[in-house]
Amino acid sequence: DSLKELFETVVNGKYSYGVVPIESSSHGTMHNVYDLLLANDSVSIVGEIGTSEKHCLCIKENVNESDITSVIGHPHILECCSDYLDHLDKVKDSHITRVGSWDSAAACYQVSQDKSNINIAAIGSQEAASYYGLKIIKSGIGNDQNAETRYIILARSNKLTKTIVDPIDIV
Image 1 (cartoon, rainbow, N blue to C red):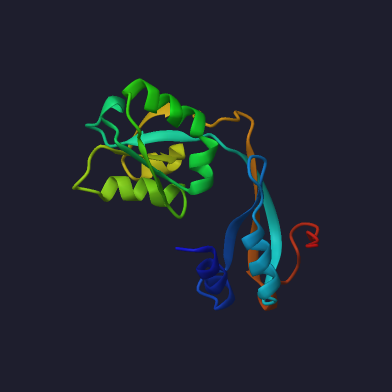
Image 2: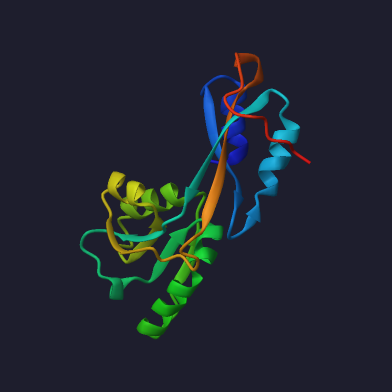
């Protein structure tokens, strides 16, 4: 549920690897990840992945865009999609509530499970929407269509036999 918990699951061996964001072209460095790396000398960086971000507005099958009253997403993602959300506010002539979530997949999960409020949407990936049975009503809603995020792959230091990529220096 949190980055700290993910680090703990790698350290205690529950998972062999963990993947965490380290930097975003939209929001810069994820300082909390650096703090966790410095605090956990039993974790090493063994790889790196860069991805372009394509944010999607995801809803339940029986909901229309005009019915949306709130949108769930990671706070950074909500900010990355603020132009589109502001546009929705204008079209509806009312404010759509923005609700923070741990990550995009968790936002999609919350929307799929909420039985009391069907007029909620999530900002998530195509994969998360598909996995949780949500319909994508708009793709590419980010303010920056060229946004990228860099992730690092973590493993327990004492379990490593070799480093997969060149080490990343932490300053």
